[in-house]
Length: 181
Image (cartoon, rainbow, N blue to C red; front, top):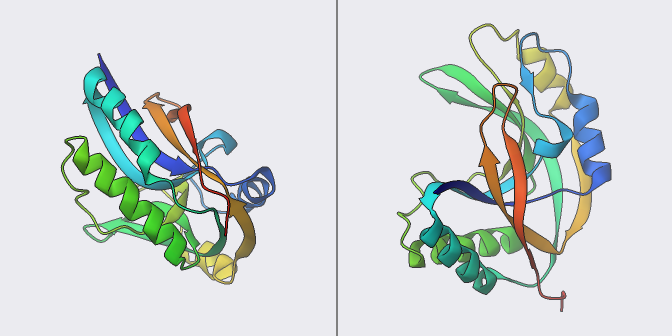
């Protein structure tokens, strides 16, 4: 049996609510729903049950001291000059970078290939396609977006199930961060 996995941080309800309130004004955007809002630390993809179990155990060792995060601005990811993802950015955080690097090391120790892309912390707001409306007005309106900070006290191993109406993300294990010094 295979499992489609990723490791992420779930923003608290007030941050998720504020992000949901932004989600309008772009025709044919596939907006994320409240259950899908997260900050990915590492996309893992399809792995067998043995690898999933080993990874789940190894991720315990990635824990760092708790820290604060904040949302800052919005942007897009493009492929071949076409926007495919609309996101809310995350304010620079050395503590987040440290946690992400530790998660990455544990993924490699569990036998996964290194992540293929440079880490860019964000919360996906919408998936875009050729039919999606103009992005400029939304990006201009949300350029100064600031939400938080909020305390991060855990990270989560999620299993993702692809569905026509959007992916379903189910928490598998929650890992507590160490109390802040």
